[in-house]
Amino acid sequence: MKLAYYIARRYLFAPKKHRAVNVISALSACGVALATVALVCTLSVFNGFQEMVAGFFTAFDPELKITVRRGKTFDPADSCLLAVRHLPQVAVWSETLEENALVRYRDRQLTATVKGVDGAWRQLASVDSLLYGAGEWVLQDSVASYAVPGVELLSELGCGIAFVDPLELYAPRPGARINVANPYAGLRHGYLHSSGLIFIVNQQEYDAHYIITSLDFARRLFGQPGRVSAIELRLAPGTDTDRTKQRIQALVGPDYLVQDRYEQQADVFRIMESEKLIAYLFLTFILIMACFNVVGSLSMLMLEKRDDVRTLRNLGADARLVSRIFRCEGGLIVVCGAAAGILLGWLLCLAQQQFGLIRLGNAGEFVTDAFPVSVQAGDIAVVFATVTVVGGVAVWQAVRYLGRRLL
Image 1 (cartoon, rainbow, N blue to C red):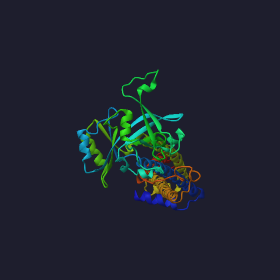
Image 2 (cartoon, rainbow, N blue to C red):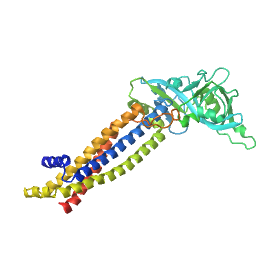
Image 3 (cartoon, helix red, strand yellow):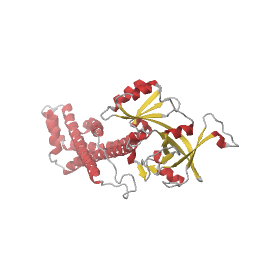
């Protein structure tokens, strides 16, 4: 094996009789390198977008969320839930109630998700970083209830931050039948006044559909006294989230579901992973095309080295050694191209992170001005394995086929 590698290395770097063979070898290595660069950069861009989206959700979603598997609401005073509340890993315990309602402002109306929160909810995440306006965080007082709507929802209703008329909210009465003659008889009714605040998460799912208000108002509107749709938790600093999640799931049993932030937005991240996989498959196909250049380079080299092969056989080399030499030659081309491509791709991603070379548009048009990138070691390993496996199979089959005809 050492002899085959030594001869292959000499063939790769030594000048050839025909200069075209050197050029073709260099082009084949460049083709593999460019395909590798495309894989590294594309996967890193998907990682960047995924981390950016996760950052938006992190500001609104709790570290852990407990919901019921059957039905929509449950009693937070359940004994197994109280055991969770007293865990030392739980720093903040917040009870929330979410449900859809019809929101009306003057002559405009739409369907929104009303999220009632208690006083501890503000401590779950960086709520202050999401809030805009000149008001104060007051969701209920002795006189009225107040709303903190999403920015897009407020725009669709056509009212400003400090709207004068209150928002009218309607929700079906539990178990009530709709009376066609008087539809409002089967609906609960409530008013929400302006708090002078709105929130912006930069995600349409929240900005265009959510209204935050007090838990007491939500319970009255939906006819769910003493019940919640979720318990949201913030863990103590330094807590292992996965281990704590498993412990809480064991405490609450099969009737409840415990989810971390990624599981709460599983559909979004599943779509992004699917898009990343499809991009990876397309670029792998391009890599396969690039490996045909390696096959062409090997065929040219075999034709040129016929005399050397004849000499080796006269010295006692068998067909296996000759085939191994050219397989090592092709493997070196693939590995050199993969290493150069990974290095160049990493440098391009680093430059994109530092300087934002590729822009998304004019400043301020999008959430981010430049394509976000995040290079992950796992992706680098997958890319290197993909290039070496695809290139290795191509070289193996090429030497096996061409060796019978050219050597």
